[in-house]
Length: 539
Image (cartoon, rainbow, N blue to C red):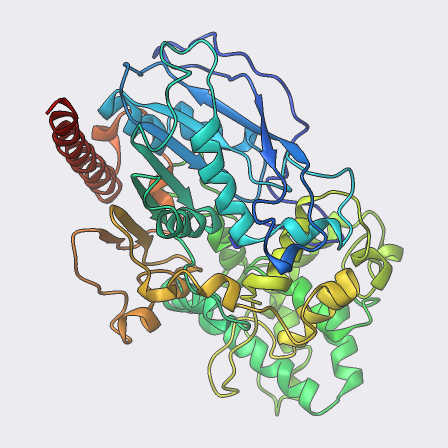
């Protein structure tokens, strides 16, 4: 969501944007014997899995080319099949999960074969050449998880010893997904539990809501306290000016950030929130992009905080802290100079010209035509599912007395306007219909051999299996063999690996060892149940 992947500002860039599809051949291998690239294959996937559902009228019998890759370097005949659910990005951007991530870890431990399946309407797996609202109607949760089931039943893999006989349910298919793909993994196991043998849902938002101020809760709780306090106080002062309708002071504030020409106060509030994250859009690295492994980590959030709290900042920066004191009863805006300096040096330069700041090419979101553009894109696909089913609009807290990291002008209506402009009558006018998403169980979701693993410091955790609302406010404490909460971890941190579990940090190593134990147990269960069936058949 971002739901789960990072979606950038509509006007700026997509962080981790999908590159153009390229054919990557298996081999050569690295010094460790692992493939360094993969061939991208195509699978004829049904556009419409539900020809009797009134939801998809008019129906179609057409198919589309769904992309996938696989890795069989550890595989031994009759080994398990691991299906990595691609999520909101291209299949290429998930290669690392085969090369040295969670799928590699599980394949290595079980002599398994790994596959990455690209999500419909992402990468090169678009059913149509454009994404009109009419064409997007097949981008739903139930159609997406039906792809997983249909693929598992029909795929044939080239150059694999038993590649024609790998399909479910005759073989143990085990799914893995992180973030939105984690939820899709869980939903697939609920809906197709007689077909798919098991699954691990990592940082999976199994519950959704329309407004999601809790996205900022882990940052508020775990971020550097001096930085967080300063941001809270700056936001309080800004919002006080907004309540007073003090247009002169607000204009001065915009100019301090180098955003004086940005007309809509909500666009201004969003732009200065980019280093923190959201709502929905951001082109810079945030708390969500932190990672345990340096190769995947980006410390942008801490660089931002270091600016806000820099005690050795030059005088021209610290002087900014008192520039608006006359509007706040003489109180300094402590940290404002460092905050503004970071935005001016990191965020504002994304815009090619100061003359363009108030356009959708840069930081304005108020161009209705932009949102209605029907070119296939990550942003449009993600927005459609957000607007129709998933919601989780990032907003400021409902309680005006609660500390906030973003201005309280950022509420549901800000995101909802993009939905209305982008899809008109194709989306619910008052927000997403979350019943389509919640039908699989929400916080109470369960299925045989379905495991949940979450990070306690993940910005999406409040929608996950270990969210406080899922656990009666007990800070993610749930009990049972099929769940694990990683203290201090972020967004699906278990999906990353380094080929050497023993060299990982203890808490990540323990998570990977737990996942290996879970999967190994499921495979033992498979062997036991199917050996019993074989005996019955022989009798």
